[in-house]
Every structure is written in C-alpha cells, then in structure tokens.
Length: 190
Image (cartoon, rainbow, N blue to C red; front, side, top):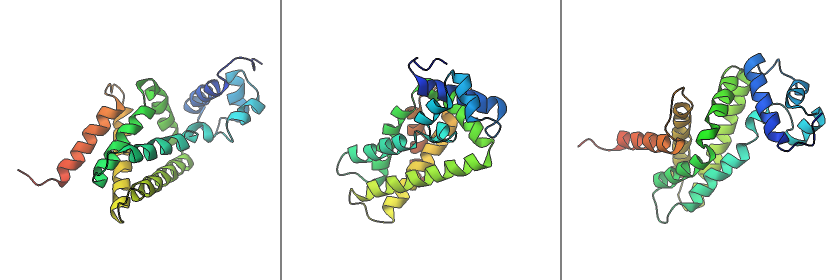
C-alpha cells in the first residue's frame, strides 16, 4: 500500500465520498474506503474516528469561522449586522473548488436519515455557538438567539443554492443576496 504518499486524509475523503455516492453510505465500509485510497484501515482511523466523520469532520472549523466572524464584526453593530458579518466570514470556508464535493456530500446525507439527523445536530450546535458569541458582545436574549437562528437559516438557504447544478455565484455572494432578501421581509414597504 502507498502509505508514504502525502495527502492521505484528502485521498481518504475523496474515496469515501465517491464510494458513498456510488454504493450508499451504509453499504460502504472503512476497509472499502482505505483500499480505494490505497491506504490501510489503520491510516483511516488516524484521520477519522469513524466513517461518518468523513462527512462531518469539518464541523469544528466551520463553527470557529462563524464565531470568529461574530467577534470580528465592527463595534457597535446591531445583532443582525453581526451575524451578517459572520456569514461573510463563513464564505471563506466554501471556496468554489469545494462546491462539487459539497454537492456529493449533501447527496449522501439526503439519502440517509441517520446522516440527516447528524446534520441537524451539527446545525443546532452551530446555532448555539453563534448565540453564545453574539451574547458575549453584550446582545441580550432573546435577540442573541434570534440572530443566531437567522444566521443559520440564511446559511442553509444559501448553501442549498450554492450546490445547485449549474450555480456559478460564490457562496459569499449568495449568502449576501439571501440576507438582503431577509432584510426586505422585515422592512416596511415604501
């Protein structure tokens, strides 16, 4: 096995996504993934705790990007502007070269109720982290929680649009447009 080649984690990730899309998540084993990547199971477990982590391993980094975006928002700013800043910070986590693997990942998740549940838990945890970060800026409840839910809702809508077949706009542009749509819902008509 070619264990000495660099990029083992990326190769395992790519092999897993391909196999999950081809065979299904439940039908794919860690052995299958390791073999497809030209590595051993032991190497797989050095990088991932289980085969679900291939899909959810970036959760902590995404959470940190949002939290850092909240912290970096200008002072003073309304809570809604703070989370808009966090959404723009999150755009760095979704460069265009990540779009196809994100599409595949979402297709795999959508086909498996257990993975859908895990995705919902991830989003709930993200919401809580954002609410705490917004609260640390002095925003009282329930505004901090409402702002956090707003950010995650806009994130979800923007992500679905970003991974649509044929979509060319950047994640940041889409998130900005969705956020402005939301603002227009709460603005009085002229």
